[in-house]
Image 1 (cartoon, rainbow, N blue to C red):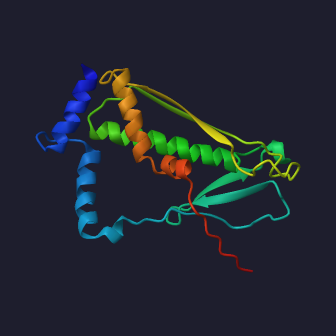
Image 2 (image 1 turned 135 degrees about the horizontal axis):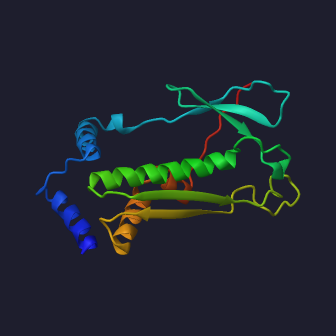
Image 3 (image 1 turned 90 degrees about the horizontal axis):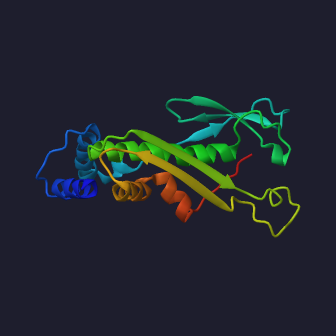
Length: 192
């Protein structure tokens, strides 16, 4: 049974009975050693920055992702709040962040356990009532009320139960999913 094969490999790896030639496993083993001796090195900071340019345009800006790589990405405002919807909006970016983290986590876990993926598709949708942000209804929360993940995976190595186990492992390991699911405090420093 394919599910048993997956679970069996996992148990054997835990017992260090078999070696995994996975590039992910190889890198994780090196990082495990590093983080055990230097736990402070496990702390990282991801960044994005918007430098206000063309401030006369209230509907478009550019966000630069990653301080080191400085990757620019144009952002627009959704038509539901008066924008032109000519570029992805921050809600789209939130969905993209979750979808990309879920999919890349899936690839890494599959690689680590020698699971050959035939297909991956992660579609994230976020649902919001914009009356709150437009201050039309003070009882409407200014937040996404819910999100939905449409996860489609195919692998000849796993049956339906095994794929469900893989998705559960992804949910437990995906930083963005866990952050959004639990929420987190956000501190704001204001300077003029």
